[in-house]
Image (cartoon, rainbow, N blue to C red; front, top):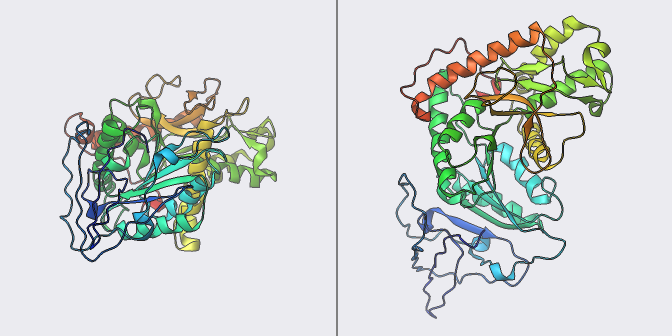
Length: 445
């Protein structure tokens, strides 16, 4: 947590008038927010009493939220207990020559199954490296707050030395404070009888609010990865509500689709996955997505030279990738949370690790200035390269044929229709929905 964070004082009264300080943001009442902190130097628990008095002081330079957040009033019993009542002495934070400065990572939907896999990968150092301390800021809802406490307890029991802080809250303005990475997983699933237009509106409202919160309190160079579906249009809504953050910093996750495409090509060619490169997912994270076999390579050779069955490439391969999630759900009875978390890790590592020479990766990014002739002002999955600095550039040396362009035009039309559907959430007028067909992926149900 940065030095600019808002500090509040929680005074706990006891017969001995014992007082202690709790590092805590003040945008929510204490009853709905907890801080869990790991530290490698001395810490002490707050004395527990039956009658606790909680008061918060607000710093005069506190950033005001543009939209008031409604929270519950004080509860008779403080929810601060155990590890959540430990203090974290920022001055005692260990900064050695081998450890980097701590970074803040915000995760929404943090009590869900995807996060249950992802958070432990982040905390272990698998993502950002073995010398990178992190603070995890977890966003949930009132219904998931108790589950978030359980998540924090599991993180504590895992004894990760790189995990320096964990905070949980239902307020995005608090969770996104000084965030340098925001992984937005939380979204409502598609219920029975719900039209795709309804889901676009419901989840769009969530991402409009989160965009405003990021714009208000996050780092100006925060990298945002949108996982919650429909992720392309949710990413567009989010970036439109965060005008102070570069639009290029927003990504819609299509890496799982890329990974699935690589798997199918490897299986067909009889090679291991690491022989498959230059795979692009074009367009929307829906069944209109276009897995690109024209530019893909197997062991350095064009896929069409290795896999001679071109009918399989145009039919079975495309369908296998597009519907892989649905098949998995039928087999296992649950969605692909584990492989989704792996693909989030892959997406982040592709941005913080230089792309291998000649290769690229897929990400749903803002189309303004793209070299492919794709409509501007939407979020569209395209081939990207990175120097490892968290940023990317679009690949220019790709080829197209009529088959590929036809597929790209279809998914482009769908994204433009989705954009019209959420115009009321992007500040572009009144939304109206003329979606051509229902192309929702099974995992969104």
